[in-house]
Length: 424
Ligand SMILES: Cc1cc2nc3c(=O)[nH]c(=O)nc-3n(C[C@H](O)[C@H](O)[C@H](O)COP(=O)(O)OP(=O)(O)OC[C@H]3O[C@@H](n4cnc5c(N)ncnc54)[C@H](O)[C@@H]3O)c2cc1C
Image (cartoon, rainbow, N blue to C red):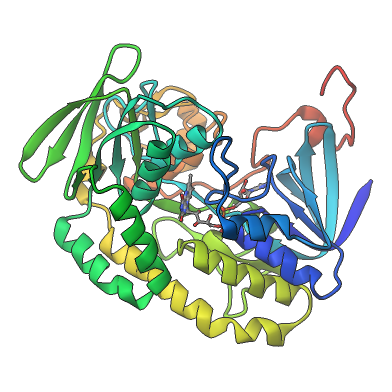
C-alpha cells in the first residue's frame, strides 16, 4: 500500500526540521522521516545525559502540523515513491514534493592501526557519548580537521572524558587566518570563542596529525606527526575525523544530478534549491558542507518551495548566500595536507567491513572492478567509509549508488509492508 504526503522531507536534522515546518505553514500534509529514533540530526542528536540547547528544543518541540516518521530508513526508490524500512516492516511513501535533507557524514582516512577498537571518528565518538557510551575518565586524543574537533572535545569533556589534546592537521597560519575572518559571522565567532574558552586547558596543536595508532586488541597510544617531530601519546580512545562529506546516496538513487567538481560530490541545486528532478528539492549539508546556519536557512527555503511559495523562499536567498560563503572559507583554510593521503601502505586495511588491504587494490582504476574482484565496499557500510576514503586518496572516484542505501531485510526489498512478530 502506498501512503501519500503533499510534502515528504527525508532527514530530520536542522535542515529537514526547518523544511517540514515551512512546508506545513502553507497547509501541506507533511511527513518528516528519519532513520534515527528522534529528530535532531547530527548537531542536535539527543543526549541521554545533557539537556538540549534552547534552539534545538524550539526547533524540535514546536514542530506543528508535521507527521514525524522516526526509525524510517529510506533504502530504495520505487519511482515515484520512497521505500522506507521501519522496525515493524516497510512502507512505500509517495509525495507531491520531496525535500532531501540527508546531511553529511565524517571523512575517515586509513592509517596504521585505524581499525583498532577504540579508534573512531571525532563526530562518531561524540555521537556514541551522547547515546550513553561511557567515556568518563577515559583518556581521549582528538585528531583530524575542522571545527567539529572542538565541538566533539567539548561534548566529551561534558561527559567526563579526559581530552589529552586536539591535533588539527591544518597549519597554525591557516587556522589563524580563518579565525581572523570569523567576525563576519558574529554568531559563529561567539560560538567559537565559547568553545575555546571552555577548552582553554586542552592543548590545541596545529599542523599535526596521527601517523599511527598502536595497541594489542585495543588502542593504547598514538604517534603524532607535529611540526617539531613525532610525539607519542598514551590514550584509551582516539577520535579522528577529517571533516565532512555530503550524503548524496538518496539524491543519486532519485536520479538527481550531482555536482562532481570536488572530490566528494554534492547535490546540485539552483538558487532556489531545485534539484534536476522536478518537485525534488535539497537543503543543508547534502548540498555542500556549510554548518548549522546554512542547514536551517536552506531547509526553510526548500520547505517554502515545496509548499508552493517561491516568494517566501526567495526572500531568504541573501541570507543563504552569506552563510554559504562560510562553507567556502572553511574548505579553504582546513584543506587537507597531502601527506595524509600517504599514511596508508599496502598492508593497511582500507575496507574494514570486508578486510581488504590497500595493496589488494593495486592495478584497479575503477571502483566497480575493484569491488567485484576484492569485495571492497560490499560490507555493511556499503562503501560509505572506504569508497569515500579511496576517493580522497585519489585511487578512484566513489562508485555509483545502488539500492539498498542501508542494509535492509529481504522482506523490505520484496515490498512486504509488515513483518510477522517473529521477524520484527
Ligand atoms: C557525526 C557528526 C557530528 C556533528 N556534530 C556537530 C556539532 O557538534 N556541532 C555542529 O555545529 N555541527 C556538527 N556537525 C555538522 C552538522 O552536520 C551540521 O551542522 C548540521 O547538523 C547539518 O544539518 P542537516 O540537517 O543538513 O544534516 P544532519 O543533521 O546530518 O541530518 C540529516 C539527517 O538525515 C537522516 N538521513 C540521511 N539519510 C537517510 C535515509 N536514507 N533515510 C532516513 N534518514 C536519513 C540522518 O539520519 C540525519 O538525521 C556534525 C556532523 C557529523 C557528521
